[in-house]
Length: 205
Ligand code: HEC
Image (cartoon, rainbow, N blue to C red; front, side, top):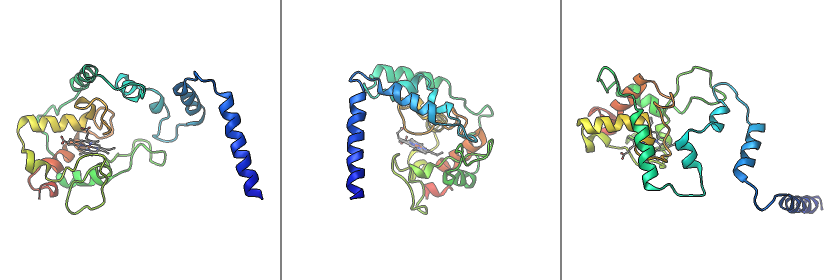
């Protein structure tokens, strides 16, 4: 009996809800208002980062249209121009430290300390080594990345640029912009570079 009443109320509620929303409602604006009212900053999880979008984020969040190739190309070029390459010309750190960064999914969450060292969480989206069998597949497998591509200058610079700002190479990439957004430091990026490209790294076995 109680169940029926609750379902009845839910249906009545949703019908009433529909009736009050005008056909031309700007749902994006309504959703933003709700988020602004309800999302709060806690620790390093800054609510502002959800609301403040740069141009490329605005374009890629607009579900009403696909991004035209000329627009993607312009946005990618602007992102690429802002990539900061290592001033000392050294691109490789320690693959062991890189593996720890790839495994570490902590950082910038409400339960993290402000100023704590962030991880890269690469395994959440990529296969990387044979040993680690728990990985996501939003991104392509990076197993044997260095073995397959080598260490030519274009590959090294592309890989750095991709890690620094994935949107420099794919405007609406789902990969975090690790350098651009200050998620990983330059030293951490070098360690991840070694994980990907060092012939001794488990990625390349
Ligand atoms: C939230 C998911 C996500 C995370 C986390 C992520 N990536 Fe990616 N990555 C992707 C996706 C999706 C692609 C393919 C599409 C694209 O090019 O952006 C990609 C592409 C790449 C590429 C280019 C591959 C190629 O074939 O050229 C590299 C290199 C890479 N990721 C490395 C990393 C590393 C290293 C980390 C951790 C520091 C990482 N990614 C974290 C989603 C992710």
